[in-house]
Image (cartoon, rainbow, N blue to C red; front, side):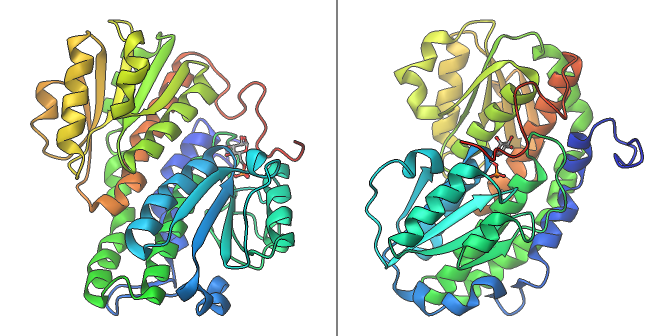
Length: 369
Ligand code: G6P
């Protein structure tokens, strides 16, 4: 088993460190930065249809649902197609309005999640076109869908999803650009610029991983907390949700992810010296707003841990701990900001003596409802 872990103490850590590679594998043969072109062979036969769709519905569970929320931001931003993101377990038992003009994207690492499969079957009966985003080739979901794009992250053993999540986000990024290309909502020069940057994201993930020692120090400071809040805005919000999920899954600390501005409608009541608050505070369109949310937490003596852009000086004046990630276009923020949150949860869980790879009560793949 030590061999399988490639020298790492846990599969989860190994999989976190595999991400520069897995994200690269996921893009291989699919992006042509110099031409400003995205090619997705798996959904090619629907290229024409994508020009005229009214709406996209994303269905998924758990971490895959968080990836779906990132996808919503990207597809709406670039392809200008309205997107709804649904928990498969809720969607399947509603009487949702689905038409033949809808495209449903089902996201699943394992490709075996019972609720996601049932949601697909229902949408299919009602005439929607179903795309899958899966990691396990030949699993049930890829067989149920009309078309799809594999994430190619390689086998994920740790129950808490890490590299599968960033691969799902990568595929959704590619899909957003592909749809934008089909619909003509993006120029070739813009695509050249974005794809050139995306091509460099694996190196930036590598740089983000280099903060590991610092993250371990931060983990030691907050490991005994009983609660933790994760806040972000825009696509930083699903990153916050995923950060909170990782922490609660493997360390059993109660954690909640919230849109930073929504904090004042509830979670702010919980903030005191005992409460660590993790902010996604990178320099993008919501930076100034996040800074005022940080001030609100500091005014109530909360402990602030901030994920910031390299070279940041503003947040550093306020936060108790700052963890830097490389600068990048806002579109790629989730791929980078997720990395330190994975490491933070990992180290906290190890320090608390938890079974990181196999947390209690959780299964890697949930094949019953
Ligand atoms: C379980 C796993 C999670 C995963 C979720 C959805 O809860 O523990 O890591 O995100 O199922 O699984 P899927 O395979 O459909 O992505």
